Image 1 (cartoon, helix red, strand yellow):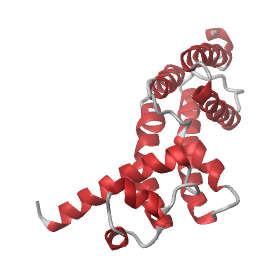
Image 2: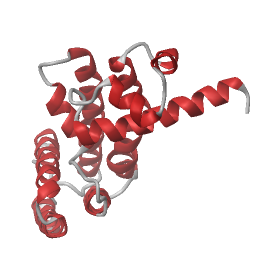
Image 3: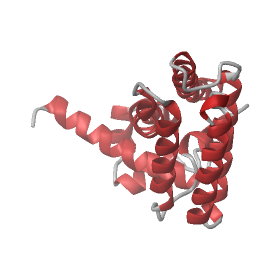
Length: 204
């Protein structure tokens, strides 16, 4: 393995372990020493790859959190056709993944947005930019559905996107300590019912 590939592999391993720690303990409750101990690295080795703890976290957002959110909640909504089936399947799959995660501590993007809000504008911008990509993607899917006759023409797609995303954020918080399976089932049933109200009236 050449040095560049080896460096990339080392950084990826550090980012995976770092995300695990930050997700479980929170960014501000995780010290550089915690990271070094978990990775069995010296300070010199850490700072060879990253300038600071903040730089390390930003690299995690760019390389891991973006990838996770995109794969679970953005890419599945990009397919053409009726948007509600794609939306329900997308959310159900994401919630099922969380339900089966024994180390679930909530929605990773939501957790960090809450933690950094008002505390670190630079990191917050990376997180809100990702949130906006998700929101725009959902709005686009609903708007496309409206143009194709799957969504009632009077529906405020921006308002619907905000409502659906907010409900997802809240549910993921409840799933941490509650009955995840029951919460997921009830949420998806209600989401199905809500989506029916957004269809053209003749199609309901």
